[in-house]
Structures are given as C-alpha cells and as structure tokens.
Length: 406
Image (cartoon, rainbow, N blue to C red; front, side, top):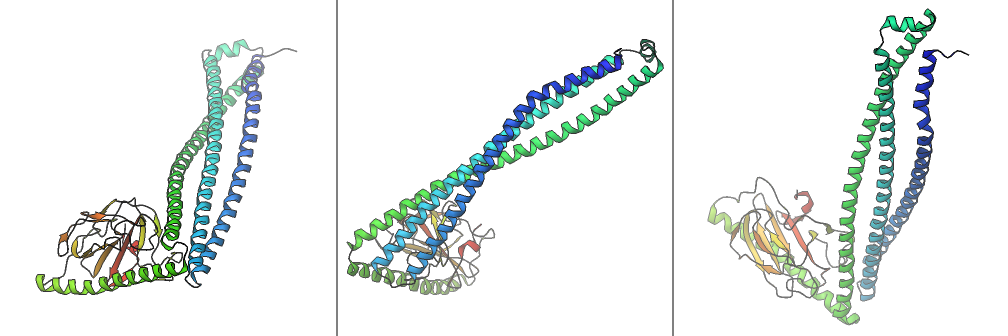
C-alpha cells in the first residue's frame, strides 16, 4: 500500500492530537470521581445542617412555651438552658457550614485545575495545527502539484488543508469558551472565599453569644442563690427599674421639647444624612419586640441590642439635645437625645457617661461607653451580657430602630 503525503500528514496529526488524550482522559476520570465524592460530602453536610435547623426551631418553641408560663426561677433557668443549647447548636451549624463551604472551594479548585488542563491541551492542539499549516505554506501550489503523483492526490491535499483551517476555527472557539468558563469558576471561588471569611466571623460571634448565655445563667444563680424568693425579689426590682426608666423617658421627652420650643422658638433640625450606628455595626442579639427575649414576661423589648464589647465608644446617632444622662450606679444607666422630626434616641446599659443634660451634641460625638456585663456599672438587673441597648422613639412611642439605621 502506497502512503500518500496527505495521508501521512493526517496520520501524524491524529497521533499528535489523540495520543496525549489517553493520559489526560485518565486524569480527567480521576478528577471526576473526586468531584463526585465531594458532591456526596456536600449533600451529607447539607442534610446535617437541615437537621440542626429543625432542632433550632424546637428550641425556639420551648423558649416561647416557657416564656408563656409563670415567671419563676425554674422556668427562667429552663429558658436559659434552652438558649444555651440553641447557642451551642448555632455554633455547630456554622462550623458545619464552614466545612461545606470548604468542600465547595475544594471542588471549584479541582474544576479550575481540570479547566486549566483542557485549555493547555487546546493551546497545544492549536500550535500543532499552525505549525503544520506553516510547513505547507512554505511550498507553492505548483510544488505541491508536482510533488503529487496525480491531480486527484493534489485535490485531496487541498481539501485536507481546508479541513485544517476549519479545525483552527473550531479550536479557537473551544478555547474562548474554556477561558470564559475558567473566569466564571475563578469568580465563584472568590465568592466562596468571601462566604468562608464571613462564616468564620459568624462563628466567633456565636461563641461570644454562648459565653454570654453561660455568664447570664451563672449571674442569675449567683444573685438568687437558687432561691425562688430571691428570684421573685430580683424580678420585682428589674420590672420596677424598667417601668421607671420608660416613664422617665416619656415625660422627659415632652418636657424637653416644650423647653426647646420656648428657647429656640423653632423645632430642632434633623440630620439630612439620617442616623448612624451608635456603636460599630455588629450582630443584633435581640430585636425590637423580640419574641425570644428572655424577660419578655416582664416587658416588651423596646429597642435592639447590638453586640459591643464592654466599654466600647457610644456615639450620638444624630445631632440633638441631651434630655437625660442618668447614672444609676449598678442600676440601669442611660442617655436620651432629642432630635428633630419628632425623633429621639435612647442608649441603655451605658457604663460611662461623657455628656451632661441640656447639652447639644453632634452626630458621631462620643457620648459614653457601652456596658451590660452583669454586675457592672450601668448594667442594671437581669442583663444578658455586654451589648448596646438602642431605642428610637417617634413622638414618644418606641419604633423599630432597624428601620432607621443604615
């Protein structure tokens, strides 16, 4: 059998293109199996997370149930125990979510490696084709014609060159598509890296919550000496303290606005930029009228609790007039600022106060330091750990601060 030049080139090209694919195919198969195994692990972690979420709902139900029952020490301890169990489950849930995200990152990295290999293979393929085309271009059409035994062989080689040109276009299109997919995978990896960083931050926050819940339980036990009589006495004091503060805030706001209208003969101007966070933006540990608030049977939670380390700077959310700066010793200390547009803000559990009543403050000015650690100045009774209690009032009525914070 006589081997013609076109046939020789086709054979050579075939060997160049398909021989490497055998070894690459083995690598690709191994990677596919590893990706499948990672997918199975991701699904398993997802099932685990779902079960933990279901258990979290059970704890929420138990907390709500106990809050609806008679306020006694046993019920309060049951609430705290359920909150502790939920906090531990929250930590486990976030840790599992971190594991799942790490698996997804590993999977994406494998896919990126696989795509890099595909792109490298496509580039080599393209280089080989171009080299063959260049070799053919060095010969004139007359030389090609004379080098063939017949016109039919010449036409076969021309057709072969046309096919090679078509192969170049297809390889380029495939390369462009692979590069696009690689870019998408790298963007996905960047997104997952950010999610992982956020989850790790959440894990730290959840651990702080757990520590606070443990401290809260120890504080209750220490204050009551496991005595129902002492607990009821503590409840009575806490309720009286909150009622007094609520009554003071309402009456003082009315008095302050009346006083200001006489002095200024006009309303206070409100910041055009709106409110800012009184402490660094952080986790909300108790929402406005929070149904899981541990002392809801005493009073509705009239603001939000923002996680803040003991002694963090507290800043005026908007410019205004200091109507009250109450230092209650170990009781509930707070600052109230009157703003324009019928708005007022209250900063509770402050451990230090830097401003005086009848003083004007500007937005962002340090007005005190946060508190809330049980048994410390300004914390008051039945506190739940270090945080900033923040209220927004509209015409004297508490409203959800989250509707005003940026």
